View 1 (cartoon, rainbow, N blue to C red):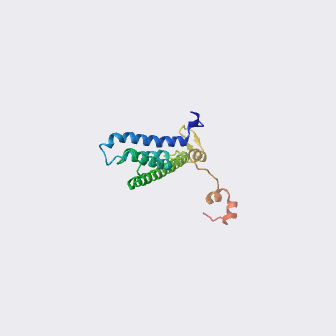
View 2 (view 1 turned 120 degrees about the vertical axis):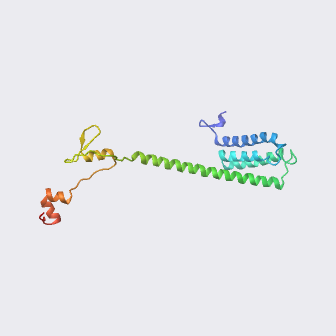
Length: 197
């Protein structure tokens, strides 16, 4: 069956045609026992066939299923069986089935698009969560040198600890108070003469 496969998969057009024919055939076979008892709802299974084909094979397949369903229903289950009579009822049924097919195909397209957007949003959220690092709890810090005690009991610089446990980086500078205390000459150039304390 080499003609049924394209690169190891079933040819998409053959798959759609199989769905169309199988859904109409199943609707026909299930309608025969119901046709004598449920006169007013004989076409429900054909509506189901149109919905199935539109959902799983697309709008065009749904329209083909609608057309085939109308013809099969007219041939087997209409007032005069085994005669194709194109009356207003047949045309009306064709329009209803075709509209239903387009509606279902449109809803299915919207559903798939919504699922795709949801999967994209979930993927972005997972990526964002994997990048987030949060420091929580109490950090034991030395009062004098400001090193932090780790879980293993070792002491490391605060900058290194925070960098390893968060996404923060450091850049160093000197505040005006420390500049005045440690570098008074630079302080005077930047801020003016020192004021007595």
